[in-house]
Picture 1 (tube, rainbow over the protein chains, first blue to last red):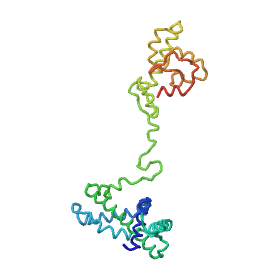
Picture 2 (tube, rainbow over the protein chains, first blue to last red):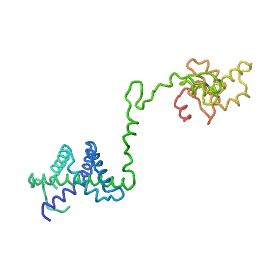
Picture 3 (cartoon, chains in turn yellow, blue):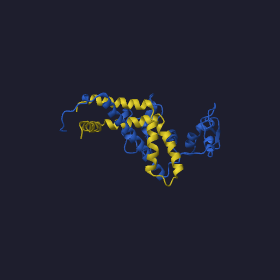
Picture 4 (tube, each protein chain N blue to C red):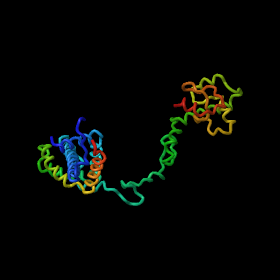
Length: 96
Length: 195
């Protein structure tokens, strides 16, 4: 394992251990609901489901349809805020 | 964690940025997956399309915004001025006074029994010459107040309603008030026993 990937792993572990990842997850979720992202995507889900048929829809179908659109639909402000928080965390815990 | 001393300060900004982006990306993907699972479960459990209503029904339940009317379109003080006829005494009573009136009229509810007992007691008072009838005390023991205290209570200025439960703060045996001492006004003991 290269030093880089070792370090990435260490950072991720720290992120999880300190509970920061969960906090970030919750923050992201709340922001996405607030800005209407969830509703937008849900509406898109409805279309997909009507198209594929209620009975035959699978998780894979949904994931394939939703994830790329979901990524694209995240508003810039939310993205910036999260990146900011992540970078702050990285800066504060730069020495492991 | 036994690792060599690693520090991020050794990383240049582009790598830091890339790392942050990756972490962010993971988080977004988590959110998307979460939504997918939620939707999939809703579909399989059958409640996904439950909140869809057609346009017509939506119009029926639109919020009403007119003066004098609440958001459902009902007039909210409609019953203020109505009068009801009491089935017992056949009097016409105002709607807001109807429930208390029924309570007294039918002889049910807490206050009506007190008032009735008070009337009995005061009519006994006028009929009997003796101060306190020992026999009567037995009947009266079932009620919330005792015959003896009522006379004393009436003399006290501070007493407004001799029949209200807060009137005299004396020691209460389980359900009945026996031989109350008029001077006990400690609110806490009364309330504690009542509850």
